[in-house]
Length: 268
Image: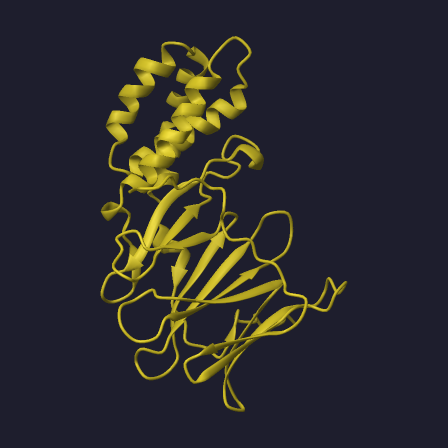
C-alpha cells in the first residue's frame, strides 16, 4: 500500500551524549559528538580498519547508519551531518565496500529539509526520498515554504534521480498542498500561505508529470474564487517552472577523499 509521504518525520540529527561505535563489516565507525557547550567545536565520525584511519567526516552534528542503497554486498554506510542553526543545512555522505574497498557513493546536499530512506518497491534496497528546498523563501517566509519531493535511487551505475518511476511520491505531496489551498480560500484567506500551497501543488504536479492537469485544476477550482492568486500565478509561473526543473542530481556528487567536507585553503 502506498503510504502518505508527508514532511513530518524527516531525520533529525542530534549528537549522542558520548562516543558511539558502529561495526561495518570488518571496519569500525566511531562517532564522537562535540564537547558540551563548545559551539565552535565539531562532531566527528572516523572509519578505521584496525588502527588505520580510512576516512573522517566532521560537522556540527554527525550521525551514522547502515542503509542498503545498492544490491549485493554489505549495506552502505551513511554519515549525516548538520551545520547547526535553526534549520539549515544537512549533508549526507554515502560509502560502499562492494568493490572490495571503501568508495564514496554520493555526497548529497540535503539543504533545509534533508532526506529519508524507504524501500519503495520492496526489493531490499532503499530509495532516498529527497525533499528539495528549491522553493524555500521563494515569495513567502521559510515557515510556510513547500517542499518538492523527488526520489533518488541506484540505477545500476550510481545514485540518480528516479522520480519518474515513483510519480505517486510528488503526487501525494501535491494533493496535500491542494487540499490546504482549497480549504484556505475565503474572505479571511492568508494570501501568503495560499501562494506557498499553490506553488507546492503546481511544482509537485510537474514532478509527477501532471503539470498541464494542475493548471486546469487551478483555473477551475482556485482562480475562479481568487483573482489575486490568478494574477500571482501568471506573474510567477515561469519562475516556478524553472525552480521545479532544477534537477535533484545537481545536489549530489561523488568525491574520493579521506577527509570530508573538504577544507578550503585559507586566504592569505
